[in-house]
Every structure is written in structure tokens, then in C-alpha cells.
Length: 90
Image 1 (cartoon, one colour):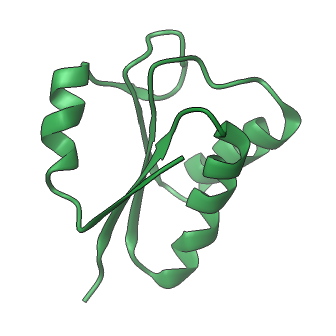
Image 2 (image 1 turned 180 degrees about the vertical axis):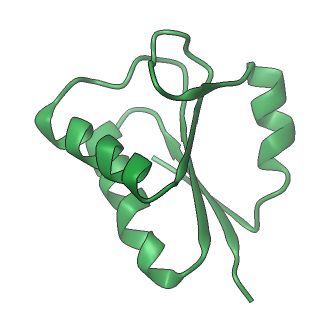
């Protein structure tokens, strides 16, 4: 049975984005949450984010500066996180 896994992107954004993509190989449901600040516009982050969109992954944020991500308030994010089997903070 597939697990639901949330990857929390905070301080180590590049590593978190790369890890979020890497674990989709497990055939689990992976959602990514970019929290509290804008995703840095590095080449790696841009490539990883574009790949996530191509793979139909859900990417959520509580920062309105993050374009092309689904915005949710911090309160709504907290409620949504209760639905996961595993939460991986970075």
C-alpha cells in the first residue's frame, strides 16, 4: 500500500527539492511544501521544480512570493500535514 509522504522545504532548499524528487521512485504519494520564504532561483531548484510539475507532484507554499505553487495559509497547511504517514523536514 502506498504511503503519503510530505517533504518540508525550509533552510536546505536544494537538498530538499532533490530528495523530494528522488523518493518518487518508491511509488508513494509525495507532496512538497515550500515554507516561510521564496524558493531560491538557482539552476538546480528551477530544474527540480519543473520536473515536479512534469511529474504531476503537488507543491504547496505559505509564501505568496512563490509563483506556480498552490498557496495555503499556515493554518491550512498544518491541517493538511495531519494526513501524511511520514513528514520529512529539511
